[in-house]
Image (cartoon, rainbow, N blue to C red; front, side):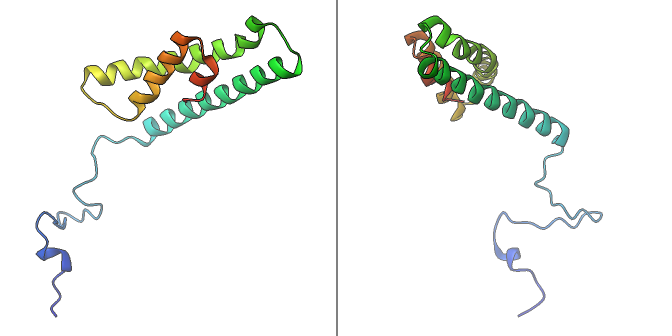
Length: 125
């Protein structure tokens, strides 16, 4: 056995030995940690608001036995706060022909809102 790396025999696998670049050629050049961190924080905020909205709905429905409109107010808020930005991003991705599993979540949110099943749409986040 020589000192040649094992991956040298595998087609399509190359080592990057240019100018001391140890990260490899497959790393994206445009990746920004700050942008990813901002997206994560936004998603975390939407998830937290959805959780609080669902909890408020359950308390208003079973704890206080409020009227239907009062029970659904937290769900309406979460639908607007979390659903509208998600559907907007999905429209942008669809126009760019980028389809993913998040498209199914967007479809379920829109369908549940049209059918008046707001609690179902809130759990899609």
